[in-house]
Image (tube, rainbow, N blue to C red):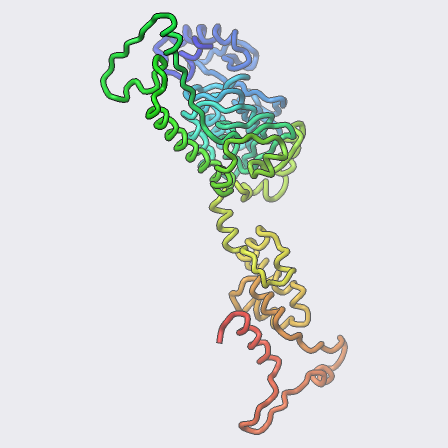
Length: 432
């Protein structure tokens, strides 16, 4: 593979046929990672060399897989995030994945009209910090209308957690290990061993910090503190990205102290959304894509803090509101505010509107009150007098309504129903 690395994703100053033969022979030893063959298994004889990335997943592809760089099943692009994650590598194998390859496959799936949803299968302990945050940001910032899910199967730690958290929805198997939100730096000193062997290493350098962290000397305290501060800075960047991706408070992420969680524990910690058997992920995702939310647009989930914040701003629970409104979910309340039809239906159809239909219609169509406030007005207002049974004459209906007792000028008269409604409205809204 090291020899092949020198030719993949690089500009090559070489005659095309010779380059194809060379790369083709090198790929024979790496059949499980990349290939340079046509649909008949023969070396591609196109004018330009072409390397096809073969993704790894347990699922068999359906449809025109030969033209797609990822496993493609029932409209779902499956992108593996395997093994150690590396910067500057444009391929994915069983034991390693390049951030560049992950991003490239994501972009391809995002642009593919055949793809209805994107699924990251994550089984990685993490990798280099270099390239990780950029890949995470790219995925997060370029999610479009297609739902993006990630499955922790069976490890999503550190850098892999960063990548997996960028999805709209995060699922975990019952045994998957996830978390480890932090960074580590290892320093090895050979000073003691060199002294025992009688060897002395002399470093000639310019700049006081040029050889900080060299392996031939024990790490000085001031250099250790400098490295530790850099680790803390990176940890904060890491926590900020996970917090943004999932939509949880950054302090909640920091408080994990780089702990790992298994299965349900990750859900309890807010790092995953759902527990699932990995063998059911495709059918589960496919079923989601068949729903209106899945087929029309990417659902608003915890992975988008800005949208969550907007929803929260219009769904703040009114502790004095009736139980029928408090029981409405945050998403439903947000839809009531945004959707005028739903707002009107919520007001007119509320249990509090029973016996107060005229006032309910007025609040629904003649005011800008949101559903929660409008129902609160209804709850604080007296009920209308019951209307006459169907089939009664107009006279009978009018006779059933108490007429106002209007006294002489200057005398107090009994408050009418309309006045009571207005008084109740002003009492709730604070208007005078």
